[in-house]
Structure formats: C-alpha cells, structure tokens
Image (cartoon, rainbow, N blue to C red):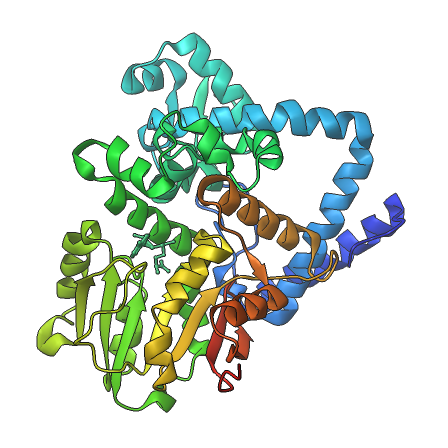
Length: 436
Ligand SMILES: C[S@@+](CC[C@H](N)C(=O)[O-])C[C@H]1O[C@@H](n2cnc3c(N)ncnc32)[C@H](O)[C@@H]1O
C-alpha cells in the first residue's frame, strides 16, 4: 500500500472502504462489531482466517494511520512521538504496577477515592493518571458519574496481559532502559544497548534470573511469552506449526531446542502421536516444564520429556538421530555469530538426515512490501531484539545467508507464512554436500 502522495479525501475514501468491508464481514458471520463497551471485542482472532476481513482491516489501519499523521502535521506528530508516547507508557506502567485494572470491577464502576484506597495511592495524582488513561481509551468515566471509573475493553485486557506487561514495563527486564541507549550502541557496535543500561554489563538471561526474587525470573519470562501469544493469536497461536510436514516425518523424535516449558511441543505431540519430543532448555525451566508436561498427560512413555541442555554445547551423545530439530523463536534472540554456534551443534544430526524447523518472523526485504502498521510492529520487535539481546529479525535472504555461514550446504527448503500468525514455518535441511 504505502501511500506516496496521499490526499485527505483519498485516504478518507480508503478508510470508508476498509471500514465498510470489515463491518460487513463481521455482520455476515454474526461476529461482534468493535466498540468501547467494557465487554466489547478485545482482538480479531475470530477473523484471522478470513482474508477479506483481514485485508480490509489492514487497509483501514494503514489509511487511518496515514490520515492521522497528515492531520496532525509534522510539528504535532513530532511532539506526539517525543512526549505523548513516552507519557502513555508511563501511565500504562503505573496502571499495571499498581494493579489498578484488577481493582476496577469487571462489570460496574468504582469511585476514584475508593479505588485509591484499594490500590494504596493518593486520589489526587491517581485522578490525573486516570484522566490521561481515558484519552488512551484505557478506562473511562461512566456517563453521568463524575469521578467514577469503569473498564473499556483495553483496560479489561490488562490483567490477562499482565505477565507480558511485566516483561515490557518492569524495571527488572531493562526493556525500557536499554532502548534509551540506542544512540550509544550505534556508536559502539557490536556492543548492544543493554550493555550500557546494566551497570554490571550482564546479559538479559542473567538479569532476569538474578534480579527477580527467588529465581522466579525464568518462569515469569516463560509466562510472558505464553501470555503474549495468547493475547495476539489466541487459539490460532500454533497455526504456524501447521506449516511443517509433521505427518511426513513418520515415527521418531523431535528435539525442541530452547523449548522453554514445552508449550510449543505439547500441542503437536497431542496431534501426532507417532512423534516423541525432547524439550531442551536451561535447567531453570525444568520444574515448570515437567509440571506442564505432566498436566498435559504427556509424561508417560517419554512422549514428551524435558532435558536440561545448553544449546551452545554439543547435543547429548546418546541421542538417537532426531527427525527434526525445532527452534521456535530462538535464533532471533542472538546475533549471527551466536546463531552459527547454535546451528553448528545441530549439524552432525542434520548431516544424518534431521531437518531443521524454524518458527521465526520473516522480515520484508524492502519498505512497503507489507502494510505500514505490520512493518512498524516488525521493526519494533527487531530493535527490541537488538536492544536487549543483540539479536535481530531476519529477511529470507538473511536466513539463507545465516544458514550458509553455519554450513555451505544448509539452506531453506520452504517458508510457509501462515494466515493469522506473525511467524512463518521455515523448513531447512542440508540441500547439498559441502564442496571445498
Ligand atoms: C524466546 S524463548 C522461546 C521459547 C519457545 N521456544 C517459544 O517459542 O516460546 C527463548 C528460549 O531460549 C532459552 N535459552 C536461552 N539461552 C539458552 C541456552 N544457552 N541454552 C538453552 N536454552 C536457552 C530460554 O530459556 C528461552 O526458553
């Protein structure tokens, strides 16, 4: 889409077209229209597999976003980025940290004075924070009830999104602080923003393990990942896994490298009983993984088992040659040279026939290839990976280049971009014998 010289009225027509189609698609399938009533629609998971609705929504967002920037004009747009957006984050952080969304009744309202007493704040600054939140459509003042607070769909979502919001907004994760150090990092490549924001220069995984009391950091991180996936994709979350040919693997073992608590392997194990899964991750994840595997009833006969393993070391020797190594959202955490080290340890298995299944985002090669708001999200994630981990999101060419760095014969066989998922299923294998 990427409008070059848009006019306000041209954009208004696009907005009307997109809004009309989306509204009609929702009506046609008896689905609720978007609204700000507290129990209104919270996401679009129910139309992820409807390309007409999804395309109309993408066009609507892009035209509305472009219209908004044009209508603001450069001066107001700059001010919005530099001040409004920063203060919005502060307000969201305050609401999350003080548990304000949990303290407002799900159905009904509460006076600001009572709310202040419930969350242990002074009502005067709380009122001021809420008044900005209302402009973000986070909470609202119910009609005819001055100084009372009620939910909107956006504020009502906060409790369920809490583990992910913790990761984004809490001091412990350094997410905010590291982004602030981008200018420093650009001058000090290959050091990363996090190196400047953490005085002891620890890496992200060490920070979340050390700074959260009782070593709960890893399990909080895993909950954050699950709540993000749930919020963004709901029951479509593992749609991307359908992009791999599990049935074609026959019987055998899949090694889920950096598999967290096994939450990616479990649904596949349920659907493909001929496959067994070994979930490898840091020993810190052992307890939560074993709990999850047991709760899924997949701990019998080693159907799914956890194996503590550092992916920077060779694969355990006793391992039978697996049918595939699954690396879901692992490589984007790491710079190329670390990815090569991780991949090198999988090569012996791959040279004996194991495939490599990657669940990753595939970045557009050129600006304008995907709708603006989708590219914006992808670029935010790319800079987030860089800021806290030194990792990055990669385009198809980047993936091919990275695989060839690990082994000249290693390449991408297929990339399946699944509807309803921001991730793609990338199947890789040794395509050619390395010739020296
Ligand atoms: C972004 S999470 C992805 C988790 C899971 N695969 C998914 O898709 O939700 C990255 C995982 O890599 C794990 N990890 C980080 N360093 C590791 C290492 N050296 N060895 C094994 N796992 C590691 C983390 O514990 C975390 O579970």
